[in-house]
Amino acid sequence: MTTKFLLDESEMPTRWYNVIPDLPSPPPPVLHPGTLQPVGPEDLAPLFPMELILQEVTTDSYVDIPGPVLDVYRLWRPSPLYRAHRLEKALGTPAHIYYKYEGVSPAGSHKPNTAVPQAYYNAQAGIRRLTTETGAGQWGTALAFACAQFGLDCEVWQVRASYDQKPYRKMMIEVFGGTIHPSPSDLTEAGRKILAEHPDSTGSLGIAISEAVEVAAQSPDTNYALGSVLNHVLLHQTIIGEEALLQMAKAGEQPDLIVGCTGGGSNFGGLAFPFLREKLAGRMAPTIRAVEPAACPSLTRGTYAYDFGDTAGMTPLMKMHSLGHDFVPDPIHAGGLRYHGMSPLISHLKELGLLEAVAKPQRECFAAGVQFARTEGIVPAPEPTHALAAAIEEALLCKETGESKVILTALCGHAHLDLPAYDAYLSGKMVDHELDSGAVDAAVRSMPPVTIG
Ligand SMILES: Cc1ncc(COP(=O)(O)O)c(C=O)c1O
Image (cartoon, rainbow, N blue to C red; front, side):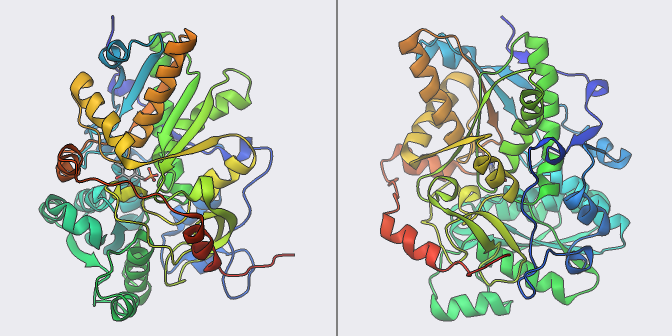
C-alpha cells in the first residue's frame, strides 16, 4: 500500500510545457486599450523582461528550464504525489484519490515555481527591483524568496483583507528581505483614489495589481511580476503536471478526474495541462474540473469578454471570464481566489469545452479541509480546500455508484500561516457569501465596451 510516489532529483522534468500549439485554436490576442490592436513586445517591455515576453507569446511546445532555475527548484522539487488512503477510508469510497502536494516549497505553495524563473530572467536583464501584488500572501512570500536568490529587491502590495487576516505573511516576506504594504495604500495614485472613495476598502487583487504596476512603470530599474493569469506563469507551473504524469505512471494509474482550485488559474493549469496534452493525443481521457469560490465566481458566472486585469485599468485588455475589473469580492478566507477575472488561457479552454467549472461556498470547503487534515495530516491552504471539496463530492458519488474512479487533485499549499481562517470556521464565525444575480450584473456592467472587427 504505497502512500508517497516520489521522483529522484535526476527524474525532475527539465522543460516546461506550452499547451497552446496543441489546441484546436489559439486564445484571442491581448489588446492595447488605446488602439485595440494586439499588444507587441514593446508595449510590455516597461513591465517585463524580454525572455518572459517571448514566453508569453511562444508557439514552441516546450521551453527549456534554465540551469540556475533548476538548481533552486531542487531545494524542494520534485514534490511528492500522495495516495489519500486515509481519506478514502474515512469516506468509505471505492475511488482512488491522489494529491500532488506543493506545500513543500519555501513559501508553502506552488507559487515559487514561477517566482524563481521570473526573478531569474529579470536579474539576467539587469533589473534591480520587482513589485507585485499578493492576496493570501503566498505569492508575495514566493517572490520575496526568489528575489533573495537572485539579489533583487522586492516590494509587495498585499490586499488589505488578507494583510489583516494573515499577519505572519508580512513577517515571512520581511524575513526573505521583501518590503510589504497593505493595499489600497497611500503610496500610489491608484491606492489614494480608492481610499478617497472607500476609506475602509478591504482591497482586491485588482487594486493591488494597479498599485504594483504603477510603481514599476515609473522606474526603469523596476519591473512588475504577476503570480498568476498570464501564459508564462501557467507555463512555469506545468512542472507540477509533468512530474505528476511520471508519478501516476509509477502508481500504475491514469486519472479519470483532475480537479484544482482557480483564482487566476495557475496551479490548476500547471497540473492539468500536461494531462490535457495526453488527452488531446488520445492517450488518456480525464475530465478536467476547475473549482472557484461562490463569492467570486468568474468562470461559472462571469462574462467572457475583454476586460482589464487590474482595477485602475492600467493593464492591456484580456479576453477572459470576468466579473468586471471594479468588482471587489467579499473578504473570504481564500484570499488567493479573490480575483475578478481568470487566466485568458483557462477561459479559452472553458469556451472550447476542454474543461468544466463549478463554484463552492467557503464553509463546505473548510469542512473538506478539516476532514482532510484529520485524515491525511496536512492542513490545506484555504484555496485548495475548494478542490478538496469537489474531490470529496466526486468520491462520495463513487460510493453511491460503486465506481473506482481515479481522482487527482492539486494540493497547492498548506495553511500554516492561514490558521485564523480555520479558527473562524471551527468557532462557527465563518459565513458563506453567495453573490446575487444583481451583484453579478452590476459588476459586469463595469467592463469596458470593446468591439473588435
Ligand atoms: C495556495 C494558493 N492556491 C491557489 C491560489 C490561486 O492562484 P492560482 O489560481 O493562480 O493557482 C493562490 C493564490 O494566491 C494560493 O496562494
